[in-house]
Length: 331
Image 1 (cartoon, rainbow, N blue to C red):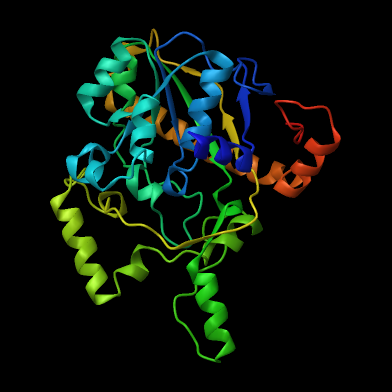
Image 2 (tube, rainbow, N blue to C red):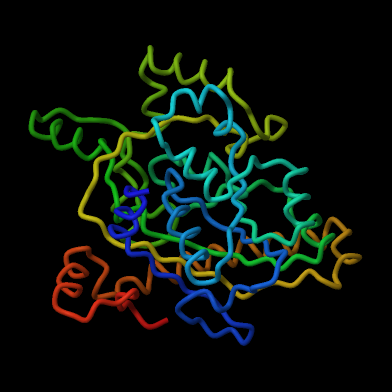
């Protein structure tokens, strides 16, 4: 738990939410207190955003968010490889449960606050050039079930992974440049359209594609994933590639995490309408677009935050009255 506190200090998370009238405010006032609430959003690299998010809901709203996590994290093999008190243990303490239709049904029926990532492992373990890019399936997997219980859906965006770590790729590139040796694998900058901050982070990670080019390592990754729990095997395209791997990362001077919870979307009273596949698909695309808008908003606005750097935050805390909330940009 000490590590969790240190991580929170390093990331200094800023939470924004959207009221019914569309006004963006700091804090979680825009997220309904009464469930069922289904919060649907972007999964940062390695799920960095999870612990600060869950902690904030506990502190501000006294609500335990129930995260839907990949079933592989709950297998005996993963647990046996974990340290004395690992991230897996932390996830369990904070209410995480395997992502299955039956578990989602149970949580909705008990009016829980649920955290759902349609992009799953593919999004949380994205490749170079894919920062803040959504990897959602074509089918609206959760919309009709949420409507069945009249759940409120809250789309959210989160950013900050590119301010926390840089990949081994940068270190390798520097070493290679010094020996005048050219390395392949440069990415198409600006591919996801979120501006300079994300472009700077795109070429930094030793990702899945890099690791799969290493003969011995690719066999190990392939075998480990074949033996583990697999999801979405019936799908095609990138969303079907849910392989687990660990990217090469190097820490950097921490920036800050920013969260924006969008305007709540009510499904109560729309059960009959959302039984129709086309109507459900339309709402699904609306939710996805809202998540993308929230991410773009945060990337743009964080440039106005004078306390984005941990150095500035440390100076502020040393010279100001202690406060739970370090100032940030005005939404």
